[in-house]
Length: 312
Image (cartoon, rainbow, N blue to C red):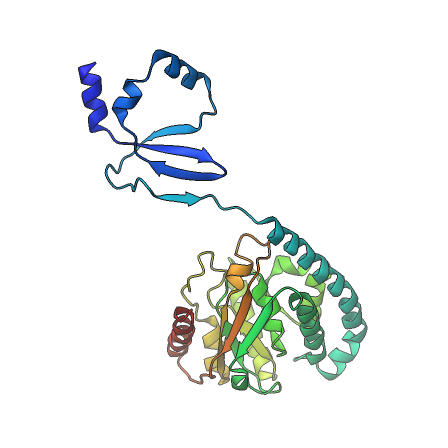
């Protein structure tokens, strides 16, 4: 028994208390466990769902006895808001897609590359969907190039809401999207009519074709839009930028328009697209950048967006 007491004294344990969906961590004295009565020990062993789970701590002395955290819980209100959001966006999309489909032959005839009418429909769809649920604040709208001036727009990417938010700007830029998205009913078909650019991410030939298409459209007077991080940030931190967007801008001599999005990652976090939290969104349009060196354009743009995010 002395040897057991000596081993227990040299070991450190953590106790996890399960209560109301939260976990609290604290130390307990090993000798108290050893001195527990036979009856208490027997009852503890039978209760497989005991309120205590004992685990060995490999970091002795590093835990805080009073530390605690709550397990993530999705608020019921946020889930209901998410259902209402998608119901509204689907209803609006079906009706507006029909308008887009009827107008498509005329768009191809008179505005094949920019397709401004389709983007006006997309702006209307986005506005009708998001404005009932969240407030969007715009800063630097005067920095947007005129609608008929081609540009390369780039932004940070935190949420599925980013697309809706950017469409409310009313600029007819071409998004780059995964090829699988084009198969979605109504939404994917509308993207095809708008002239969105398909991309297979892991296919180098598809990536090259995508950049060539962007250069071609820009030379024809259309604008393109890139998320240079490549995908949504799950921790809301700004990731590394890929140079594709800036290579297009340098080759075609059009301005790069950096945009910073704030708040979308809190309202609909990446990986949690089924909920819609309360909150507001801020869109900051920075002054356009012109240059012939893709690396310089990439660094300057990322620094602008990073500095703005750091001010949150």
